[in-house]
Amino acid sequence: MKAPDSPLQERLMAVQRELDGAQESADRELTLVAVSKTKPDQDLMEAYAMGQKDFGENRVQELVGKAQRLPKDILWHMIGHVQTNKIKDFLPWVHLVHGVDRVKVLRVMQKEAAKINRKVRVLLQVHIAEEATKFGFDGEEILALGAPEVWEEFPHLLPVGLMGMATFTEDQEQVRREFSRLAKLHKVLQPSMDEMLRERGEQWSTLSMGMSGDWRVAVQEGSTMVRVGSAIFGMRNTLNTKA
Image (tube, rainbow, N blue to C red; front, top):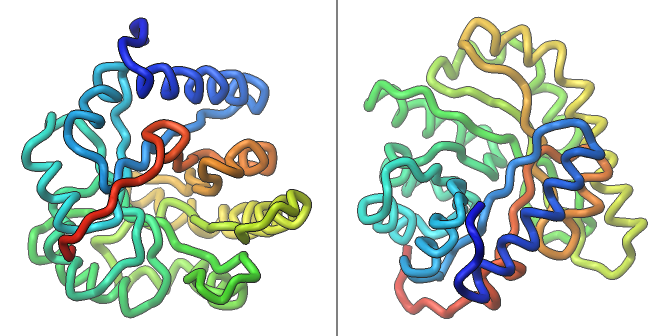
């Protein structure tokens, strides 16, 4: 990573250095997704110049526009709540879809992926927080999705892991418990999901949990992917456009 030329690059380097240290301690690969929603192309290019390739967006129109304009080796993550009527718009552009939180989304995504003959990598979102506003499958539902035969209905989808968001609270022990619960579910599902994914050339490898305020705890509890926005880009900008 080159020397930083701006405050944004300094913040990114600080996060990356800390993540590198955590990765060494955890003895596993950790992926940093820079959450760039509402941020201008210039900010993304500053991060890109420092070697950052994974970026997360939650507005379809914004993701597609940036994907069309910015370097083609960027890996785009759809991190927002998935609206079924928008799937066909973002599907050609994404590297990974976070937040697949209901079977209806899987069915629409399979249909649209088949149309463009593409295998799409997805994360299944589990509701681990006490907040009712968080989306996701409950524990029983996610265990049911661990049956390999379920995925015969979705040949164009590659469920490579789980995603979850902890409660927004100062109680770090509660956050830790929620992340720990998700990590245990991920481990329970691994044998059956690996068996199914092996035939599709993939593996059950991703546990996406942790954001700017709690990623350190998430990594301690087993996260392999963290989504960091404000700690890199600062406070989000306001958009008036719909996406």
